[in-house]
Structures are given as C-alpha cells and as structure tokens.
View 1 (cartoon, rainbow, N blue to C red):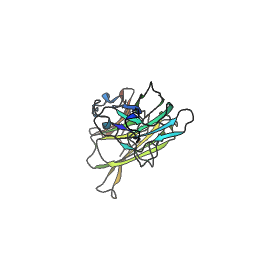
View 2: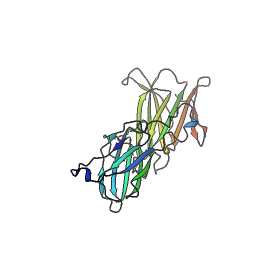
View 3: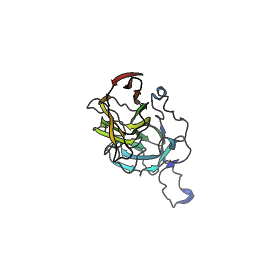
View 4: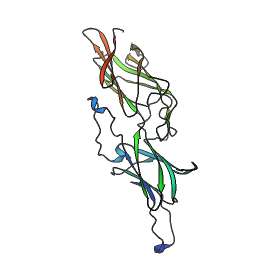
Length: 277
C-alpha cells in the first residue's frame, strides 16, 4: 500500500516521469519479548500483512535543520496484504528531513498521549528517523516499535460469587515522542466483569519509581448491588516496553489462603500469602 498525493501535470509525454521519494515502514515488535514464558497467551504469526499489527498510521515530516513541519497525514487506515507499508512523498525537494510515524493512533487522543483520563488506550507503535532524499537515495526504511508493555493478571480457583475486578495502576508514563522519549506520569483504571485472564496495555513505569497495582474484587448481581469481597495490598511492579509483567492470584481452598505471585526475572516469586476476606 502506498500513501501519498499525485500532482497533476499538463506538459504531456515530454515531461519526465517523477519518481516520488518514499519510505517503507515495517513492524519490529510483533510479539512481546518474553511471551514464550506465558502459555496462557498465544504468540501472533509474524508473517501476516502489515495491517494486522497496526490498523492506522499517522506521519509528520519536518525539515531536519529548522524543525519546520513540511507535511503531515491524517490518521489513515492501513489496508492491503503487503508486509510493509509505503509512504510516498511526491513534490518533496531534495534535502534532509526528519520523519515521525505513529501506528494505532485514534482521533480521540492527541498525538503522543499513551494514557488519558485513566484509560488504557491502544497498542501504539512509533518510529522516527532522518531521511536523506536525493537522486541517489529515493527510498528509505523505518521500523515501528511498540511503546507499551502488557500487564497479565491470572486468577485461579476464585469463589463463584466474585463478579467484577477493579484494577488501578499508578506511576506509568503518560506520553512519548516518536523516538521513545517518555514523559509525565499517570494512572490507568480498569473495572470489568470477572475473568480468569485479564490483559492490560500499559506504558512503562515512570521516573517516579515502581508502578503500584491495586486490585479489588466484587460480588453482586448488578453494578449497583456489588460489594467489595477482597481488596489486596498494594503491590509494586515494573512495567517495561514490549514486555509482559504478570501477577498470579490463586485461592488455595484447602488452606483458605490467597497466594499472590509475581513473575520477576524469569520466575514466579511469592509476594503474599493472605487469609484476608
């Protein structure tokens, strides 16, 4: 798929055919770096069309020396079966430019915002680079990288009366530029029907220190009638870009104990054994 603009000409066959400068964009982070350590998740096929990994693209092209914005796109839907996506730049003079590209943006959030209003948002990808457009170099290549990690919550042997999970994660970055320079700090909230496997896209832990995870489990037939059943102590964890951070909660029915483990440095470590209700 090629994205660009076609410029009309009236000089007929005598005009030289313009070969617009272009950039081929591919996806680097198709699977999380440590996904093989989590049999609960299925890795994605890494040989699928580009649109499988990022459903939208947005780009901004700047003059490399002045920083002036030369051209930008709308948030465009990716289509087709190609493994790469080609951005075309007809009418761009020779010279040096800086290109920033974003994948999986929506029109609901400003460019660069990873989380807003406590929401998870999408699996955003970015890339950037300096382009040297000249007659000898008409095509450049850039590779998209994932901006977020994934929090995996595994719940086992829970009482049947638990109906809802409330999850709060604080101290994660709020924004990034296309060069993966993160900034800000925010909280992401999730309140969903109970499930044994809960996945959440989260920016890396911010410069404030460890991210803090708070989990509360509810019972009740409706949202209005739900009451807290179990609230766990606040847990510290570290979110990393393109990595899975995992927490396992298992109710040991024979002992009446809640066993909480966290996947740290390649192994499951017990962080709490609780008999709270």
